[in-house]
Image (cartoon, rainbow, N blue to C red; front, top):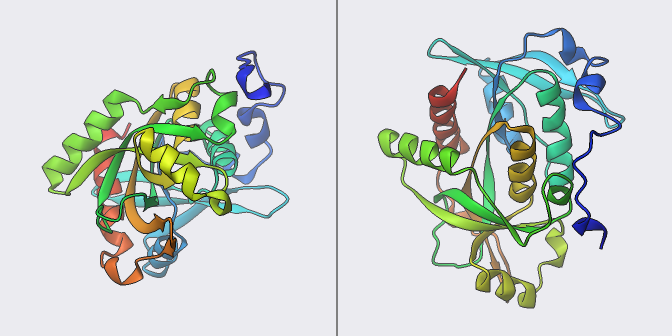
Length: 255
């Protein structure tokens, strides 16, 4: 099968070559990037005057703004990836091409067990590879592990900062609208407790490029076999709380 034919030869198109033609190229890109999957968070930070646009990635879909965020004497880039493995990796590849080397990625995830409360901070230790992008960055396998050093770093930061958290295996899927009851049960049998759309690909990409990836989730909806439970009333934390956790990680690993 095509996805079993891993090819690690040099690519025909490379991120650094593409970025040379983009507005971000002239900017001194911070080495560490905060990557929230939250438009509401970015809008809030912009409204509070906490972000300064320093460039953009360009595509036929239009510009993707790259911001600067400063706190406690530290300067970070902030960029909101698009949802989905291929989109997220493609955009972060271009930030890598512009000089970024460490990525703190965070966003919500679904839970497969309703007993896992909403707004729980999750450090993924491994991802089930039910998407396509990761197979272009790592040999075929059912799962891919997170970098143990990154997991340990996040755990130490969250412990020190008193952020309650737990570790879990995640199911990364390309197809939000094809999460069937049988597939959910199979993923649970394989050890998954949560589900999202990027982690497996980001693990493979960051390991292929030898970059620092510090990815965590906060639990949101429940993917129930009887239907989709958004659990809106149970989600009481503001996304700013999770941003604080991300900033704590970025400050611990900044270069």
